[in-house]
Length: 255
Image 1 (tube, rainbow, N blue to C red):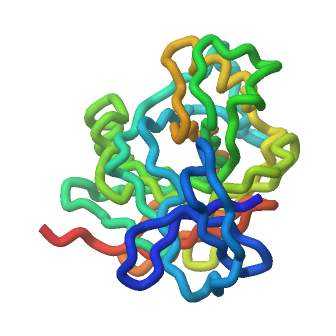
Image 2: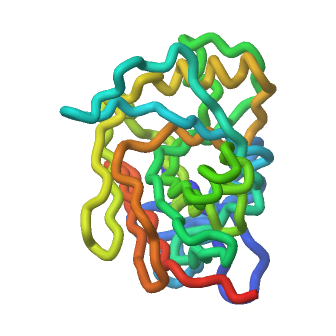
C-alpha cells in the first residue's frame, strides 16, 4: 500500500492512501490506529508533502560496493552512521537550496527505511517486524564543508538537504531493487540493493543496538557511486523501482 502526507487547498496536512492515482483520506495515523476513507480525490489535485515527519534521521556513510577499478579495498566491518536534523526534510517538487557557505554541493540517491514500531536491540531476523515501509531520499551534502570540517555534521545539516517522497511504499522487495539518480536528465547513479555491503536487516539491528528506534524514524541506507555537483537550475530525479520518482529543482538560497 502507498501512504502519503498531503495538503488539499488550504486544509491542514493529512495522511492518505493511494489507489490507482486516487487519494483517500486516513483518519488517525498509519503508525497507529487508523481508518481508510474512500479514495475519491485525484492524486494530481493535491500537494504531496514529505510522507513522514521523522523524530530522527540516521544515515549510513558507505554501504555500496564500488565497481570495476573503483572497488573498495577493505569493506567496513560495521556501518559508519551519521545523523541529520529533521529540519532538512522537504517533499517532492520542493526546492533544494544551495547555501552561500558552500561552493560544492552534491546529491546522493538513497533508499529510505521508515520505522513503524518502537524497538531496541532488534535482531536481524526480526527487523522486518519493525519496518513500516520504504521511500526515496536524496541526501544532499556540502562536500567542501565536509572536507574542511573533517566531519559531515554541518555539511549534511542545511535546510532542504533531505528531499523525501513521494510516498511510503509498504510492499517492496528490497533484495534486488534498482536505484537511479539523474540530474538534468543525465544518469549519475545506478545500482541495485543487492550491492549493499550491509543489508537492511543488518542496518536496523546495528542502529537499534546504539539507539532506540521510534515510529516515523528514518534510516538512509547508503548511496552508490555517482554523487556530483549541483548548480542552480538543475533538476534532481531520484528513482527506485517499485516506488517511483522523487523530483526536486535546485536553486540558490537568498539570505
